[in-house]
Image (cartoon, rainbow, N blue to C red; front, side, top):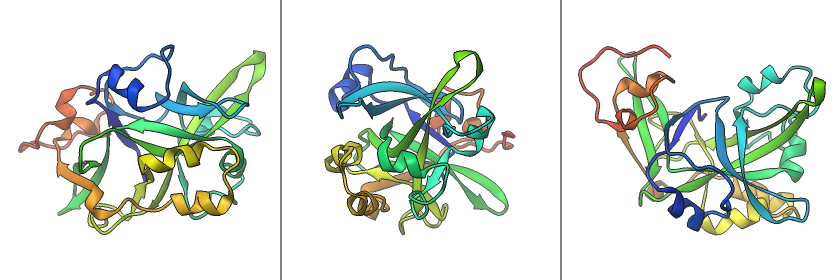
Length: 229
């Protein structure tokens, strides 16, 4: 799964040059992005043109009675994304890029979870394969939300967790966004990143608390008691 990630390294000008987010979307450095936060994404217009947008993390399908269900929809499994009622419409026609430069996973070591920071091996920002939806509530409330697609872990990350988010290769991002992309191609994109293209290292327990959202989240671990979520 993917429950925390970051977009901490690049400055906004680098991200605007790397992704078609435009100039109107606010870009903030984040070290500890958590579910229900607003996140930087690239969606497409009705004409199929890419656009930058802030979406709430945790997909709320259009048919949901309560937007609170989004907190349980932060991830969509690649193996079932085309069939699950919550995600199948988005997979068919509302795909997005979710911009990041790393994510966290917790490795069990003697029963104590050790936070791990996972990035591309070259340290460059990348895009998770994402899905998005629009929910209309009472009093003309409109909520736009997203979910990160996950797949089985590659061999490099399997000792940490059995799942990982889909880290799209840069050359496949346009295909993922393309409204006309055939399902066979889309499923081919939902594969684990090659082992050689990822890197990981342990970090301290600051990331365990959503209240912490600064450089301390990426500091090397020290001998300390873990902070509860």
